[in-house]
Image (cartoon, rainbow, N blue to C red):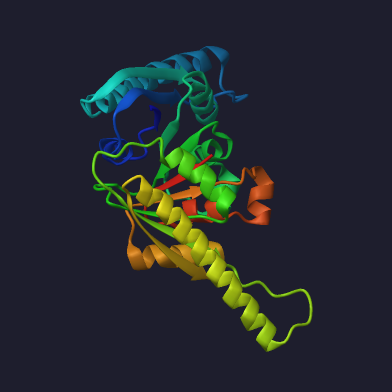
Length: 287
C-alpha cells in the first residue's frame, strides 16, 4: 500500500502519523509539506522592500518546513519500505492532490483543525478540498487513534458496501479488528396516502431487508476471519450513525462517498460530509 501523509504543522504529528502504526505492511510513504507564502503585493510597499520581505519569509518558512519534514520522517514506523518527501511552494490542497496523483497513493492521511461546515465552506479548508477531490481514499484525522480494535462501517446499499469492502480487503491491520456493519432506514414520509397498517408493514419489510443486508456484509467479513456483527438504525442516516458512534465508541469510521462536490455537496447534504465534520473519531472516506 502507498500512503501519502499531508502535514502543515497545525495538527500534532503524533496525531497525523500515529494511525500508520495500525496498518501494514506499507510499501511506500510520501510526506508532503506545502509552503504557502503570504500575499505581499501591497501598493504602499516599495518593490525592493517587498522582494526583501518575500525572500526572508521564504527562507524562514522553508527552514521550518524542512525541520517539520525531518521530524515527521523520524517518527514513522520502522517497517516502512520507501519513504519520500515533497516540499513545494504553492496552494497546499493543489500540491497534495498533485502528489497523490503522481505517487499513485492508495490512501491519504490528513489532519483537520475542526472547522464547522459553514466556516469551512466560507473560509476554505485544505482537508475539505482534498477530501472532495482526492483520487483515492482519504483518512481524516481530527483526534488521535491510539488503538484500532473496533471499526464502524455504515453502508447505504449493496453497491455501496461493494466499494467499501473492495477497499477494506486491501488493508492489512497489525492487530485483529472487530467490525460493526450498519444499515439505516431513513423512515421518509410516503408521497401517497397510506393506512397505518400499510406504513407499519412497509417499515417492517424494509427493516428486515436492511438487517439482511447488514448481516450479509458481516458474513463476508467473517469469511475473511474478521469478527463482525450487524446493526440497523432508524431516522436521518448521518445522525443515526453518529448516535451509534456514541453507543459503540468505535476507534475508526469507514464510510463511502457518492462523489458529490463543491456547493452541490453542501446544499444537497451528504452523509459522509456530515460524518467528517461531526464524528469524534477518525473517518476514512472510501473514494
